[in-house]
Length: 272
Ligand SMILES: NC(=O)c1ccc[n+]([C@@H]2O[C@H](COP(=O)([O-])OP(=O)(O)OC[C@H]3O[C@@H](n4cnc5c(N)ncnc54)[C@H](OP(=O)(O)O)[C@@H]3O)[C@@H](O)[C@H]2O)c1
Image 1 (cartoon, rainbow, N blue to C red):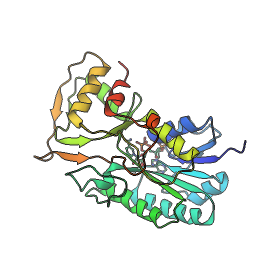
Image 2: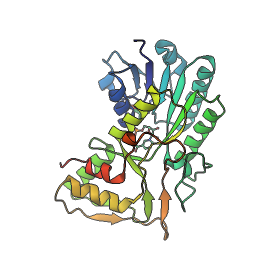
Image 3: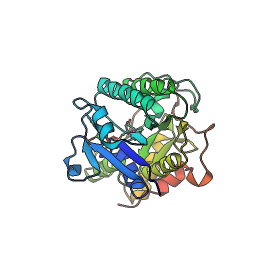
């Protein structure tokens, strides 16, 4: 079978590596790393520093059918690299899947947002994501997929690792009682991305739980699942009213078996 060639930018990171592991048995999968030298000897990995290296060189080497962008790093350098990616997409049949964020809606605090709502952000991070999304929307349909992702949890996630460390060190755990969110985990997120790539899907996808939960309630329930702990909570109020940070799916719905609820994500966490 003619396997698709996939290039994951940021494949040494939490999200990028989870995607790499999900895809590598099914596709001819390559990834980039930057500072994490543990990938240096892996033949499927290339070193790429967004501030120093030319993305075209990586693209010329791999000649991917699909690029998944899951990078962090200097913001102006991210913009420039994605501008170059757009040029490459115009010259080739390659598709780009961009890991965006629910933060593209962080200026709208009174309600959750859906795929085709107008984006607006008050944060530098959200504005960066919007800028890259807008570049992608100027390209012909069928070349790009914008994947808006809420906070990602999971046993190996940095967020859960930090919670476990705080419990072990008896440090307070920050919770946001006024913040209403949707969430996801690494396993379901990567299955969803696998499905989208397999089916050549493009467009805008909100890859989070179908339902909402208060941040404080979610974190407390996850901790109950981790074991019989009684940590100190630091309740952080950023506003007096409830605030939403949620990108819910409505127009581009995935098959039932690929959807997830907050409760499933909570129950997925294993005791320490
Ligand atoms: N984690 C979440 O909850 C979440 C939620 C929504 C959206 N996202 C998005 O998902 C993407 C990945 O996030 P993550 O949580 O997986 O972050 P991460 O674990 O910090 O991974 C970031 C990746 O980017 C690479 N990188 C960092 N600086 C670089 C540079 N100067 N040049 C080239 N590569 C560089 C890292 O390589 P090295 O480690 O090798 O340096 C790593 O592979 C981001 O775009 C983020 O906005 C994440």
